[in-house]
Amino acid sequence: MGSTGSRTPFWMQANQFGTVPLTSPSGSVRGGFEKYWSISQSGKTDNKWRAGVGVEAVANFYDNTKVLLPQLHGTLRFKNWELYVGRKKQSLGLADSTIGSGSYAWSGNALPIPKIFIGTTRFVPVPFTKGWLSFNAFYSDGLFEKNRPITSGLKFHQKAFYARLGKADSKVKLYGGFNHQVQWGGKSPYLTQNGNLPDGLSNYVHAVFGTIGGSGDDITFFDSTSRIGNHLGSVDIALEIETFASSIFLYRQFIYEDGSLFYLTTLSDGLTGVRIRRKNSYGANFEITEGVLEVLYTKHQGGNVFVIGDGKQRGIDNYFNNQQVRDGWSYFDRTIGTPFIPPTSQTNWKWPNYADNFTSNNRVTVLHLGLKGTLFRKVMWQSKLSYSSNAGSYNEPFVGTPKQFSGLLALHTRVNLLGGMTLKGSYAADIGDLYPKTHGFMLGIRKDFSSF
Image 1 (cartoon, helix red, strand yellow):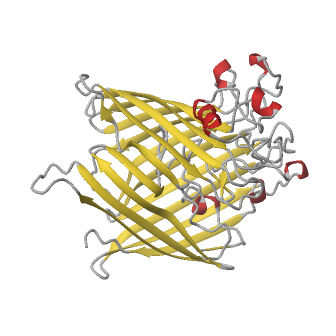
Image 2 (image 1 turned 90 degrees about the horizontal axis):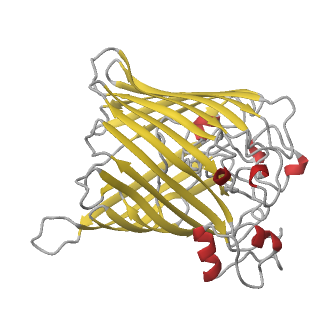
Image 3 (image 1 turned 120 degrees about the horizontal axis):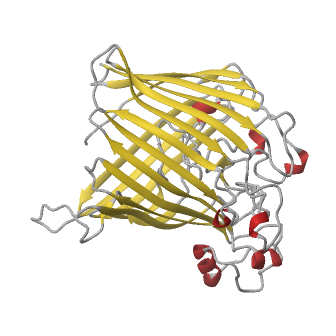
Protein backbone atom coordinates (compact mmCIF):
# COMPACT_ATOMS: atom_id res chain seq x y z
CA MET A 1 0.00 0.00 0.00
CA GLY A 2 1.13 3.50 -0.75
CA SER A 3 -0.28 7.03 -0.86
CA THR A 4 0.58 10.60 -1.73
CA GLY A 5 0.93 11.42 1.96
CA SER A 6 1.71 9.67 5.22
CA ARG A 7 -1.90 8.66 5.86
CA THR A 8 -3.73 5.63 4.46
CA PRO A 9 -6.97 6.79 2.76
CA PHE A 10 -10.16 6.34 4.78
CA TRP A 11 -11.87 3.54 2.85
CA MET A 12 -8.63 1.60 2.47
CA GLN A 13 -8.32 1.18 6.26
CA ALA A 14 -11.85 1.68 7.68
CA ASN A 15 -14.03 -1.35 8.57
CA GLN A 16 -11.09 -3.74 8.09
CA PHE A 17 -11.24 -5.08 11.66
CA GLY A 18 -8.33 -2.85 12.65
CA THR A 19 -5.81 -4.74 10.52
CA VAL A 20 -4.78 -2.02 8.02
CA PRO A 21 -2.27 0.58 9.28
CA LEU A 22 -3.28 4.24 9.38
CA THR A 23 0.15 5.27 8.10
CA SER A 24 1.50 4.83 4.60
CA PRO A 25 3.39 3.31 2.84
CA SER A 26 3.08 -0.15 4.35
CA GLY A 27 3.11 -3.84 3.52
CA SER A 28 1.08 -6.69 4.98
CA VAL A 29 1.44 -10.47 5.13
CA ARG A 30 -1.56 -12.48 6.34
CA GLY A 31 -2.41 -16.07 6.98
CA GLY A 32 -5.40 -17.82 8.47
CA PHE A 33 -6.87 -21.23 9.27
CA GLU A 34 -10.32 -22.30 10.38
CA LYS A 35 -11.77 -25.78 10.60
CA TYR A 36 -14.68 -27.62 12.28
CA TRP A 37 -14.90 -31.31 13.10
CA SER A 38 -17.90 -33.47 13.86
CA ILE A 39 -17.87 -34.84 17.43
CA SER A 40 -21.12 -36.78 17.18
CA GLN A 41 -21.18 -40.37 18.40
CA SER A 42 -19.53 -42.96 16.20
CA GLY A 43 -21.77 -44.13 13.39
CA LYS A 44 -24.09 -41.11 13.49
CA THR A 45 -24.19 -38.79 10.50
CA ASP A 46 -26.46 -36.03 11.81
CA ASN A 47 -23.44 -33.81 12.55
CA LYS A 48 -25.26 -31.98 15.36
CA TRP A 49 -22.17 -31.46 17.53
CA ARG A 50 -19.10 -29.81 16.02
CA ALA A 51 -15.89 -28.38 17.45
CA GLY A 52 -13.66 -25.90 15.70
CA VAL A 53 -10.66 -23.62 15.97
CA GLY A 54 -9.66 -20.55 14.03
CA VAL A 55 -6.63 -18.29 13.86
CA GLU A 56 -5.70 -15.38 11.63
CA ALA A 57 -2.41 -13.51 11.88
CA VAL A 58 -1.52 -10.21 10.21
CA ALA A 59 2.02 -8.83 10.07
CA ASN A 60 2.14 -5.17 9.04
CA PHE A 61 5.36 -3.49 7.95
CA TYR A 62 5.63 0.33 8.05
CA ASP A 63 7.66 2.54 10.44
CA ASN A 64 7.78 -0.51 12.68
CA THR A 65 6.58 -4.11 12.42
CA LYS A 66 3.37 -5.07 14.17
CA VAL A 67 1.72 -8.50 14.42
CA LEU A 68 -2.04 -8.67 15.04
CA LEU A 69 -4.41 -11.56 15.71
CA PRO A 70 -7.87 -10.50 14.46
CA GLN A 71 -9.12 -14.06 14.97
CA LEU A 72 -8.14 -16.63 17.58
CA HIS A 73 -10.95 -18.79 18.92
CA GLY A 74 -12.09 -22.18 20.07
CA THR A 75 -15.72 -22.97 19.21
CA LEU A 76 -18.30 -25.60 20.10
CA ARG A 77 -21.44 -25.82 17.94
CA PHE A 78 -24.72 -27.66 18.38
CA LYS A 79 -27.14 -27.37 15.49
CA ASN A 80 -27.62 -23.60 15.02
CA TRP A 81 -26.03 -22.62 18.34
CA GLU A 82 -22.42 -21.93 19.22
CA LEU A 83 -20.22 -21.22 22.21
CA TYR A 84 -16.81 -19.72 21.59
CA VAL A 85 -13.96 -18.19 23.55
CA GLY A 86 -11.56 -15.73 21.99
CA ARG A 87 -11.61 -13.33 19.08
CA LYS A 88 -13.87 -13.83 16.08
CA LYS A 89 -14.92 -11.43 13.33
CA GLN A 90 -18.58 -10.57 13.73
CA SER A 91 -21.18 -8.49 11.91
CA LEU A 92 -24.02 -7.02 13.93
CA GLY A 93 -27.26 -5.20 13.25
CA LEU A 94 -29.80 -4.95 10.47
CA ALA A 95 -27.64 -3.29 7.81
CA ASP A 96 -25.45 -4.24 4.88
CA SER A 97 -22.05 -5.48 6.09
CA THR A 98 -20.17 -5.61 2.77
CA ILE A 99 -20.36 -2.37 0.77
CA GLY A 100 -22.33 -0.32 3.32
CA SER A 101 -20.82 2.17 5.76
CA GLY A 102 -21.12 -0.28 8.69
CA SER A 103 -23.62 -0.63 11.52
CA TYR A 104 -23.76 2.33 13.89
CA ALA A 105 -22.63 0.56 17.08
CA TRP A 106 -20.49 -2.27 15.66
CA SER A 107 -19.04 -1.68 12.22
CA GLY A 108 -16.01 -3.98 12.00
CA ASN A 109 -13.69 -0.96 12.21
CA ALA A 110 -11.70 -2.22 15.21
CA LEU A 111 -10.04 -5.48 16.14
CA PRO A 112 -12.57 -8.00 17.52
CA ILE A 113 -12.77 -7.83 21.31
CA PRO A 114 -11.88 -11.14 23.06
CA LYS A 115 -14.94 -12.56 24.79
CA ILE A 116 -17.00 -15.54 25.83
CA PHE A 117 -19.95 -15.81 23.45
CA ILE A 118 -23.05 -17.97 23.37
CA GLY A 119 -25.72 -17.54 20.73
CA THR A 120 -27.18 -18.57 17.40
CA THR A 121 -25.33 -18.75 14.10
CA ARG A 122 -28.37 -17.78 12.01
CA PHE A 123 -32.10 -17.12 12.31
CA VAL A 124 -33.64 -20.09 14.12
CA PRO A 125 -37.35 -20.95 13.76
CA VAL A 126 -39.46 -20.65 16.91
CA PRO A 127 -41.15 -23.99 17.70
CA PHE A 128 -44.82 -24.39 16.69
CA THR A 129 -44.73 -21.38 14.32
CA LYS A 130 -44.04 -23.47 11.18
CA GLY A 131 -41.08 -21.24 10.35
CA TRP A 132 -43.09 -18.00 10.26
CA LEU A 133 -41.29 -16.61 13.33
CA SER A 134 -37.52 -16.88 13.81
CA PHE A 135 -34.91 -15.30 16.05
CA ASN A 136 -31.17 -14.62 16.08
CA ALA A 137 -29.60 -13.76 19.45
CA PHE A 138 -26.43 -13.89 21.56
CA TYR A 139 -25.01 -13.00 24.97
CA SER A 140 -21.33 -12.29 25.63
CA ASP A 141 -18.79 -10.82 28.04
CA GLY A 142 -15.20 -9.82 27.39
CA LEU A 143 -12.27 -7.56 28.24
CA PHE A 144 -10.84 -4.40 26.70
CA GLU A 145 -7.13 -3.89 26.13
CA LYS A 146 -4.89 -3.35 29.15
CA ASN A 147 -3.05 -0.23 28.00
CA ARG A 148 -5.90 2.15 27.18
CA PRO A 149 -5.05 5.88 27.14
CA ILE A 150 -7.12 6.67 30.28
CA THR A 151 -8.95 3.67 31.74
CA SER A 152 -7.63 0.25 32.72
CA GLY A 153 -9.16 -3.12 33.55
CA LEU A 154 -12.27 -2.16 31.58
CA LYS A 155 -14.84 -4.95 31.08
CA PHE A 156 -17.17 -5.52 28.13
CA HIS A 157 -20.74 -6.77 28.01
CA GLN A 158 -22.69 -7.29 24.77
CA LYS A 159 -25.93 -8.89 23.72
CA ALA A 160 -28.40 -8.73 20.86
CA PHE A 161 -31.81 -10.10 19.92
CA TYR A 162 -33.43 -9.97 16.48
CA ALA A 163 -36.71 -11.48 15.30
CA ARG A 164 -37.94 -12.24 11.79
CA LEU A 165 -41.56 -12.51 10.72
CA GLY A 166 -41.84 -14.61 7.58
CA LYS A 167 -40.36 -17.86 6.36
CA ALA A 168 -36.87 -18.00 4.86
CA ASP A 169 -38.39 -18.22 1.36
CA SER A 170 -41.23 -15.72 1.91
CA LYS A 171 -41.61 -12.89 -0.59
CA VAL A 172 -41.88 -10.35 2.25
CA LYS A 173 -40.08 -10.54 5.60
CA LEU A 174 -40.12 -8.16 8.56
CA TYR A 175 -37.21 -7.82 11.00
CA GLY A 176 -36.79 -6.09 14.33
CA GLY A 177 -34.46 -6.16 17.31
CA PHE A 178 -31.73 -4.44 19.30
CA ASN A 179 -28.07 -4.63 20.27
CA HIS A 180 -26.68 -3.50 23.63
CA GLN A 181 -23.04 -2.78 24.52
CA VAL A 182 -21.59 -1.77 27.91
CA GLN A 183 -18.14 -0.67 29.09
CA TRP A 184 -17.96 -1.15 32.85
CA GLY A 185 -15.68 -1.98 35.79
CA GLY A 186 -11.97 -1.23 35.93
CA LYS A 187 -10.36 2.07 36.83
CA SER A 188 -10.68 5.68 35.72
CA PRO A 189 -9.38 8.97 37.17
CA TYR A 190 -12.68 10.69 36.33
CA LEU A 191 -15.85 10.79 38.49
CA THR A 192 -14.82 7.78 40.61
CA GLN A 193 -14.09 6.92 44.23
CA ASN A 194 -10.33 6.31 44.60
CA GLY A 195 -10.11 5.72 40.86
CA ASN A 196 -12.32 2.60 40.94
CA LEU A 197 -15.35 2.17 38.67
CA PRO A 198 -18.22 0.12 40.22
CA ASP A 199 -17.47 -3.60 39.99
CA GLY A 200 -18.73 -6.91 41.32
CA LEU A 201 -21.72 -9.15 40.67
CA SER A 202 -24.48 -6.78 41.80
CA ASN A 203 -23.15 -3.98 39.63
CA TYR A 204 -22.74 -6.42 36.74
CA VAL A 205 -26.50 -7.09 36.97
CA HIS A 206 -27.13 -3.34 36.75
CA ALA A 207 -24.81 -3.15 33.73
CA VAL A 208 -26.61 -6.03 31.98
CA PHE A 209 -30.11 -4.63 32.50
CA GLY A 210 -29.16 -0.96 32.19
CA THR A 211 -30.89 -0.08 35.44
CA ILE A 212 -30.14 3.02 37.51
CA GLY A 213 -28.48 2.39 40.85
CA GLY A 214 -25.61 0.28 42.01
CA SER A 215 -24.03 -0.81 45.25
CA GLY A 216 -20.70 -0.69 47.05
CA ASP A 217 -18.20 1.86 48.31
CA ASP A 218 -17.25 2.89 44.75
CA ILE A 219 -20.67 4.30 43.81
CA THR A 220 -20.56 8.03 43.04
CA PHE A 221 -23.32 10.59 42.44
CA PHE A 222 -22.64 10.17 38.71
CA ASP A 223 -23.26 6.40 38.98
CA SER A 224 -26.39 6.71 41.11
CA THR A 225 -28.04 9.26 38.79
CA SER A 226 -26.90 7.63 35.56
CA ARG A 227 -26.15 3.94 35.01
CA ILE A 228 -23.36 1.54 35.86
CA GLY A 229 -21.01 1.74 32.90
CA ASN A 230 -21.12 3.34 29.46
CA HIS A 231 -24.14 1.99 27.52
CA LEU A 232 -24.85 2.32 23.81
CA GLY A 233 -26.45 0.49 20.90
CA SER A 234 -29.25 0.65 18.38
CA VAL A 235 -32.83 -0.48 17.92
CA ASP A 236 -33.21 -1.83 14.37
CA ILE A 237 -36.09 -2.50 12.01
CA ALA A 238 -35.99 -3.81 8.44
CA LEU A 239 -38.15 -4.96 5.55
CA GLU A 240 -37.00 -7.48 2.92
CA ILE A 241 -38.87 -7.88 -0.38
CA GLU A 242 -38.14 -10.65 -2.88
CA THR A 243 -39.05 -10.09 -6.53
CA PHE A 244 -38.31 -12.18 -9.59
CA ALA A 245 -35.29 -10.08 -10.53
CA SER A 246 -33.96 -8.74 -7.24
CA SER A 247 -33.90 -8.74 -3.45
CA ILE A 248 -34.66 -5.41 -1.75
CA PHE A 249 -33.63 -4.80 1.87
CA LEU A 250 -34.69 -1.58 3.63
CA TYR A 251 -33.39 -0.88 7.14
CA ARG A 252 -33.27 1.72 9.89
CA GLN A 253 -31.09 1.81 13.02
CA PHE A 254 -32.26 4.10 15.85
CA ILE A 255 -29.45 5.24 18.16
CA TYR A 256 -29.59 5.08 21.95
CA GLU A 257 -26.85 6.06 24.37
CA ASP A 258 -28.12 8.35 27.11
CA GLY A 259 -31.79 7.47 27.52
CA SER A 260 -33.02 10.02 25.00
CA LEU A 261 -34.52 7.42 22.65
CA PHE A 262 -36.85 6.31 25.46
CA TYR A 263 -38.33 9.83 25.43
CA LEU A 264 -38.42 9.80 21.59
CA THR A 265 -36.19 12.88 21.35
CA THR A 266 -33.52 11.30 19.12
CA LEU A 267 -35.72 9.66 16.48
CA SER A 268 -34.06 11.71 13.74
CA ASP A 269 -30.62 10.25 14.58
CA GLY A 270 -29.64 6.92 13.07
CA LEU A 271 -28.64 4.93 10.00
CA THR A 272 -31.14 4.54 7.15
CA GLY A 273 -30.40 2.39 4.13
CA VAL A 274 -31.59 0.34 1.20
CA ARG A 275 -29.77 -2.54 -0.49
CA ILE A 276 -30.76 -4.00 -3.86
CA ARG A 277 -29.26 -7.28 -5.10
CA ARG A 278 -29.87 -8.57 -8.58
CA LYS A 279 -30.63 -12.27 -8.88
CA ASN A 280 -29.78 -12.71 -12.55
CA SER A 281 -26.65 -12.08 -14.59
CA TYR A 282 -26.86 -11.51 -18.33
CA GLY A 283 -23.18 -11.92 -19.17
CA ALA A 284 -22.56 -8.29 -20.15
CA ASN A 285 -19.05 -6.84 -20.10
CA PHE A 286 -20.11 -4.43 -17.37
CA GLU A 287 -22.74 -5.24 -14.76
CA ILE A 288 -23.89 -3.81 -11.45
CA THR A 289 -25.06 -6.70 -9.29
CA GLU A 290 -25.61 -4.94 -5.97
CA GLY A 291 -26.08 -1.41 -4.67
CA VAL A 292 -26.40 0.17 -1.22
CA LEU A 293 -27.54 3.71 -0.46
CA GLU A 294 -27.32 4.96 3.15
CA VAL A 295 -27.79 8.12 5.17
CA LEU A 296 -26.19 8.40 8.62
CA TYR A 297 -27.37 11.32 10.78
CA THR A 298 -26.15 11.96 14.35
CA LYS A 299 -26.46 15.75 14.73
CA HIS A 300 -29.57 16.04 16.90
CA GLN A 301 -28.54 14.01 20.00
CA GLY A 302 -31.71 15.07 21.84
CA GLY A 303 -30.88 18.75 21.52
CA ASN A 304 -28.26 21.03 23.06
CA VAL A 305 -29.66 21.08 26.62
CA PHE A 306 -29.35 18.39 29.31
CA VAL A 307 -31.44 18.57 32.48
CA ILE A 308 -31.48 15.60 34.89
CA GLY A 309 -35.02 14.27 35.33
CA ASP A 310 -36.46 16.17 32.36
CA GLY A 311 -37.11 13.74 29.51
CA LYS A 312 -37.81 16.53 27.01
CA GLN A 313 -34.47 18.20 27.76
CA ARG A 314 -32.27 15.13 27.94
CA GLY A 315 -29.91 16.18 25.16
CA ILE A 316 -26.18 16.39 24.40
CA ASP A 317 -25.93 12.60 24.14
CA ASN A 318 -22.30 13.08 23.03
CA TYR A 319 -22.14 9.82 21.08
CA PHE A 320 -19.12 7.53 21.73
CA ASN A 321 -17.84 9.82 24.52
CA ASN A 322 -18.36 9.17 28.23
CA GLN A 323 -17.30 11.29 31.20
CA GLN A 324 -15.99 8.28 33.16
CA VAL A 325 -14.67 6.23 30.23
CA ARG A 326 -13.00 9.16 28.49
CA ASP A 327 -11.12 7.00 26.00
CA GLY A 328 -14.59 6.29 24.69
CA TRP A 329 -16.16 3.68 22.47
CA SER A 330 -12.83 2.46 21.13
CA TYR A 331 -10.50 -0.51 21.04
CA PHE A 332 -6.79 0.08 20.42
CA ASP A 333 -7.63 3.69 19.45
CA ARG A 334 -10.07 2.59 16.72
CA THR A 335 -13.75 3.45 16.77
CA ILE A 336 -15.74 0.27 17.41
CA GLY A 337 -18.86 1.79 15.87
CA THR A 338 -19.30 3.73 12.65
CA PRO A 339 -15.93 4.97 11.35
CA PHE A 340 -17.54 8.34 10.54
CA ILE A 341 -17.24 9.22 14.24
CA PRO A 342 -13.42 9.08 14.38
CA PRO A 343 -10.88 9.51 17.18
CA THR A 344 -9.81 13.12 17.64
CA SER A 345 -6.22 12.09 16.86
CA GLN A 346 -7.14 11.06 13.31
CA THR A 347 -8.62 14.34 12.05
CA ASN A 348 -7.30 17.80 11.20
CA TRP A 349 -9.44 19.21 14.05
CA LYS A 350 -7.68 18.60 17.37
CA TRP A 351 -9.51 20.79 19.87
CA PRO A 352 -7.69 21.39 23.20
CA ASN A 353 -10.97 21.05 25.13
CA TYR A 354 -11.33 17.51 23.81
CA ALA A 355 -7.79 16.37 24.56
CA ASP A 356 -9.14 13.92 27.17
CA ASN A 357 -12.21 12.75 25.23
CA PHE A 358 -12.25 10.10 22.56
CA THR A 359 -13.85 12.00 19.67
CA SER A 360 -14.32 15.69 18.89
CA ASN A 361 -16.64 14.92 15.94
CA ASN A 362 -19.84 13.01 16.74
CA ARG A 363 -22.38 15.30 15.02
CA VAL A 364 -22.24 14.17 11.40
CA THR A 365 -24.37 13.74 8.29
CA VAL A 366 -23.13 11.10 5.85
CA LEU A 367 -24.42 10.14 2.40
CA HIS A 368 -22.95 6.81 1.33
CA LEU A 369 -23.20 4.84 -1.93
CA GLY A 370 -21.80 1.34 -2.30
CA LEU A 371 -21.81 -0.59 -5.58
CA LYS A 372 -20.39 -3.87 -6.81
CA GLY A 373 -20.53 -5.95 -9.95
CA THR A 374 -18.51 -7.58 -12.75
CA LEU A 375 -16.27 -6.33 -15.54
CA PHE A 376 -15.62 -8.41 -18.67
CA ARG A 377 -17.37 -11.29 -16.83
CA LYS A 378 -14.12 -12.19 -15.03
CA VAL A 379 -13.22 -9.17 -12.93
CA MET A 380 -15.20 -8.40 -9.75
CA TRP A 381 -15.35 -4.75 -8.75
CA GLN A 382 -16.77 -2.73 -5.89
CA SER A 383 -16.86 0.92 -4.90
CA LYS A 384 -17.58 2.94 -1.77
CA LEU A 385 -18.35 6.65 -2.15
CA SER A 386 -19.06 8.75 0.96
CA TYR A 387 -19.72 12.44 1.51
CA SER A 388 -19.95 13.83 5.03
CA SER A 389 -20.77 17.10 6.78
CA ASN A 390 -19.03 17.36 10.16
CA ALA A 391 -20.18 19.70 12.94
CA GLY A 392 -17.90 18.57 15.79
CA SER A 393 -19.78 18.28 19.10
CA TYR A 394 -22.25 20.38 21.07
CA ASN A 395 -19.61 21.25 23.67
CA GLU A 396 -17.05 22.28 21.04
CA PRO A 397 -18.59 22.88 17.58
CA PHE A 398 -16.36 22.90 14.52
CA VAL A 399 -15.92 26.23 12.76
CA GLY A 400 -17.31 26.16 9.24
CA THR A 401 -18.70 22.56 9.30
CA PRO A 402 -15.91 20.85 7.30
CA LYS A 403 -17.02 18.68 4.38
CA GLN A 404 -15.29 15.43 3.39
CA PHE A 405 -15.38 13.01 0.44
CA SER A 406 -13.84 9.57 0.72
CA GLY A 407 -13.97 7.05 -2.12
CA LEU A 408 -12.70 3.60 -3.05
CA LEU A 409 -12.61 1.51 -6.23
CA ALA A 410 -11.45 -2.10 -5.79
CA LEU A 411 -10.95 -4.91 -8.33
CA HIS A 412 -10.12 -8.59 -8.01
CA THR A 413 -9.88 -11.51 -10.40
CA ARG A 414 -8.71 -15.12 -10.52
CA VAL A 415 -5.32 -15.90 -12.08
CA ASN A 416 -3.89 -19.30 -12.99
CA LEU A 417 -0.90 -19.37 -10.66
CA LEU A 418 -0.11 -22.17 -8.19
CA GLY A 419 -3.43 -23.86 -8.85
CA GLY A 420 -5.41 -20.63 -8.80
CA MET A 421 -4.94 -17.37 -6.92
CA THR A 422 -6.75 -14.07 -6.55
CA LEU A 423 -5.12 -10.84 -7.72
CA LYS A 424 -6.58 -7.70 -6.18
CA GLY A 425 -5.98 -3.98 -6.32
CA SER A 426 -7.67 -0.76 -5.24
CA TYR A 427 -7.50 3.00 -5.49
CA ALA A 428 -8.81 5.32 -2.76
CA ALA A 429 -8.93 9.05 -2.15
CA ASP A 430 -9.73 11.52 0.63
CA ILE A 431 -10.68 15.02 -0.53
CA GLY A 432 -11.96 17.64 1.91
CA ASP A 433 -11.24 19.46 5.16
CA LEU A 434 -11.64 16.76 7.82
CA TYR A 435 -8.69 14.57 6.74
CA PRO A 436 -5.49 15.38 4.85
CA LYS A 437 -5.97 15.27 1.08
CA THR A 438 -4.67 11.85 0.06
CA HIS A 439 -4.67 9.47 -2.92
CA GLY A 440 -3.60 5.88 -2.33
CA PHE A 441 -3.37 2.43 -3.87
CA MET A 442 -3.16 -1.21 -2.80
CA LEU A 443 -1.96 -4.29 -4.68
CA GLY A 444 -2.21 -7.80 -3.27
CA ILE A 445 -2.42 -11.51 -4.04
CA ARG A 446 -4.31 -14.19 -2.12
CA LYS A 447 -4.31 -17.97 -2.08
CA ASP A 448 -7.19 -20.00 -0.58
CA PHE A 449 -6.92 -23.64 0.41
CA SER A 450 -10.38 -25.15 0.62
CA SER A 451 -9.30 -28.44 2.23
CA PHE A 452 -6.36 -30.08 3.99
